[in-house]
Amino acid sequence: MPEDLSGGEKQRVAVARALAGNPPIILADEPTGMLDSKTGRLITEVLHDLAHNEGRLVFMVSHDSRVASLADRILHFEDGQLVE
Image 1: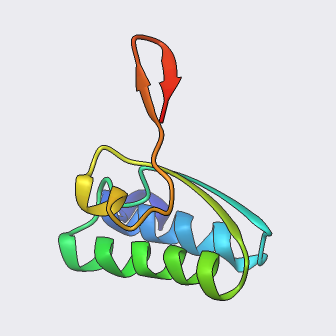
Image 2: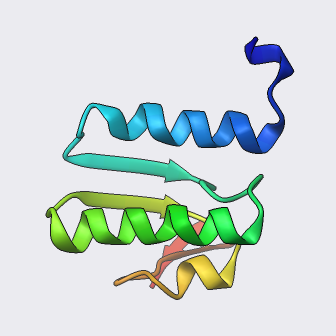
């Protein structure tokens, strides 16, 4: 049952559901937030590959600098303003 899944399991299901329809644009809000480091790396690698090999547009929000290091472009919010 869904209520019996852990937070990480629920997050993996959510990512799989979001990618299942092959969307051209992917909005990923903290996609690795509740995952162990190995699974988090796998998810970020999948998103990176979708952007670079399949031409998908991926917007990812993360507080994890390891995740951000894979980005082609990094934007920050500072004092309510978007800065590059």
